[in-house]
Image (cartoon, rainbow, N blue to C red; front, top):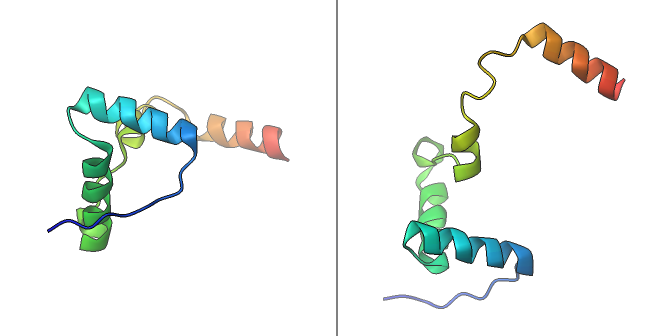
Length: 76
């Protein structure tokens, strides 16, 4: 049995979610259901959102000290 849920979401987010769902061969409803099921299952079962999964490992060659200096210069 399914239950209808009404959400208020920024129109740009909805448009992006529809494109993402279409490319993934699913629906926005299924994306939301899967995400909600994952977060209520507990932190050990939550997967990274796709944007974070794509970024994983992208800073492997970055010198941590260079990054810290950059942060100090930018925000100090």
